[in-house]
Length: 395
Image 1 (cartoon, rainbow, N blue to C red):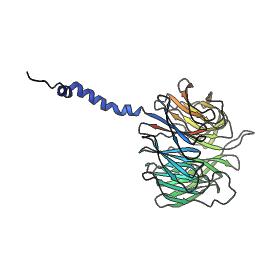
Image 2: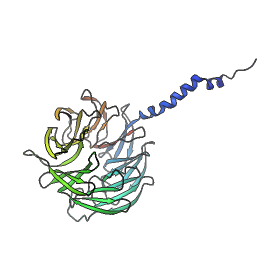
Image 3: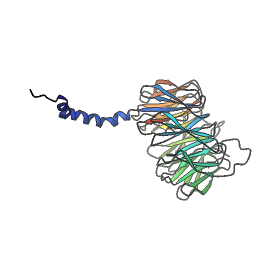
Image 4: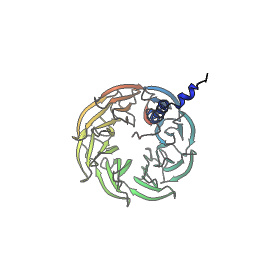
């Protein structure tokens, strides 16, 4: 009797081949389901990795002292700025391991990844310098002095660095001299120093790419946003924030409406979100929030603004079209929230951290209520996100 090769028949079966093809086609979708949060704990000098789908902690990694912000490279490296030691911690986001510690000339305050993911910009808390780190080798390729530090300046000397979309230039804030410094990365030279009315915190690029909106922390009159023309690096206008009696000025972050008509300005010294009409350059509204609004996050469907606070335990929800306060969602009894937020890709959930309650909180966007909570380490003040092979911004 002739023997039949059943295995060969199975392998060549059209049905089997079809199933195999479907499996291979589905692999990217399965890979895309991975959703990890890398949560930096200033209180425990660590990064906790949480699976946001199962809501389980996977691993805790050691860092330098007081880890805060993070920047991710497309190849799968996450760089952690340590605000209590002169180094960066490098995490392999695929293997979930610490792979390197990069010595620094001073204590870093913030960092930003270049648009091509090849160079990391690092600025300092106790020095007026910009360091450029090669992502592939973890080596500092250059450290540039952007000003003379002097003595007696007790605040952080620099804040958030900002890359131009083409990756040619980095803008850094010099808090000692109230200036914005533009640096040509390839040449390693300062090309412009732009005077500001006070200490700058964060830079936002207008949707058309033509104007920098510089959110200033403190100015002589309180706080403001300075508009800078990208083509000439000159100040177009400085727009002071209207403050109510008893309010203090301390600008933090902002955001543009999806239709680009409005800019929302968060002032840590108030309990409101200030609305700027982009065309007229007039402040037209102040929307009620909790105390110390820091980050206005716009939902993926463009319906809501979720406001993260740094002096309150709530997330304020604002109707974006009506520019009206809807409700506060309590996420903890503490008054500090992490400087980060995240909407899931389907837009159904929003994540934030109540730092004094040691909780990551998941909010149902449709119901506008807390869906679940996940424990995190003490004083967790920032987190990065990994979605499959991508790393969406979290601030």
